[in-house]
View 1 (cartoon, rainbow, N blue to C red):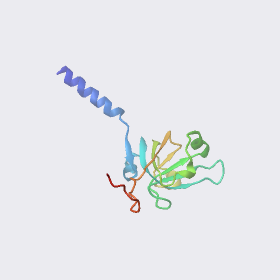
View 2 (cartoon, one colour):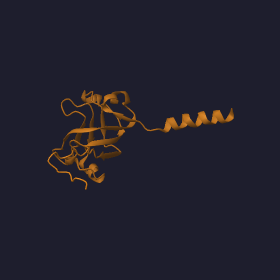
View 3 (cartoon, rainbow, N blue to C red):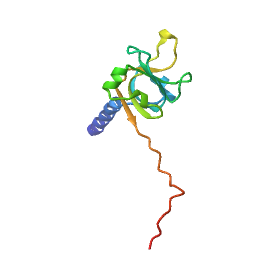
View 4 (cartoon, rainbow, N blue to C red):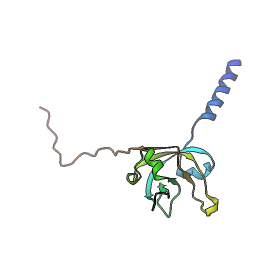
Length: 137
């Protein structure tokens, strides 16, 4: 019985420390929480000056965006993220999901995320129909 209680306590403790990875489809349920978000970069709006942030729209581009990452270009540079090369790439982003009620926006956002991971989605190589295969002898 004692072992069962310890096991239950351990499992509940581990569940509390687990990190959430979510998609943009459920992002509104995670406002105020620190999570990993995965999705495909639909568009990147580069800043007009050094003080403005860049905006990374995930899964849908502006004006139909469902999630936006705002990041200072110098911060992205320190993270070794090339903002101008993100379009179409799969990313994982970690940070706190917020909605800027002051601006009247209802789009969930993340400001200067703690981590960005670019994952390479390489499609399976398609065979070249013109390529000749060698016959086995």
